[in-house]
Length: 368
Image (cartoon, rainbow, N blue to C red; front, side):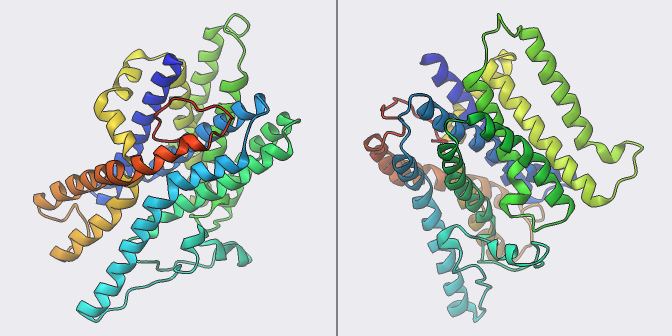
């Protein structure tokens, strides 16, 4: 149990890294940091792993409760999500009355149901083109993707709970399907576009749950496999540097797959403990703290950035005075921390009433 809790701390640290990476990307400091947009997919890999591990634990013991699983997801996701939505809508209304400008509110009917951008599925190419969205709430698309996953994954596993190998096979097949949809340039904020990241996490959860002892599969063989996957991932990420002529949509589709695979490798290495120094860094108190507030940090930082830039009439954090940078990071962390202690921790105390696997596990994992 203690060893599992340590691993969960390290995963919290990794989630903190993902949140900070997304914040840096949204500051638009340099083109060299543009790849940090893929840290959203690191969130997806972690979610796929953690959620599937919970479901598998319950199915193995024949004690999984879909009702309690969904209630716990609601307690975790909804409060901060709807708080952010309300604040963003208030900003839209305030902007109208103070400045006489009515901001775009496309999506106002879909966001309460986590259906952001799903109208693109009605278009023949799954892409109706660019659209404006609720002021400072565009990034909520990723929460919608995760909520859709939280609904579909347990249903799939419950239907096939006696044939979990079919679930594994289906998830394997969905990875190239996601790559295909990216090549076809479907709308980039849809589940079908990003589902390979979730699938990588799901596959790791299957491996971690059903893995064989190292006496059967030697550690050196496991490390060799991980190393080969890492080499393949790096090759996909830097495919545009190789003497291969590929169209831009192929490069984008395959490079994102490379990032998702390398994030899977990092997660695998952390769980196995093969790089003790990496584990030490990820389980350090500052990293675990950032992981514990990562959800609210992700949701709050965009409205805070928007408000700051509106005040000084700038387009990006990178073009703003130093005090704006400090305010951007400081206020985001402060708001996320206050959300944790005043809202999330209090609501999460209700979770013990809804054990997913029929057992109240004594854990404090930000991702659950």
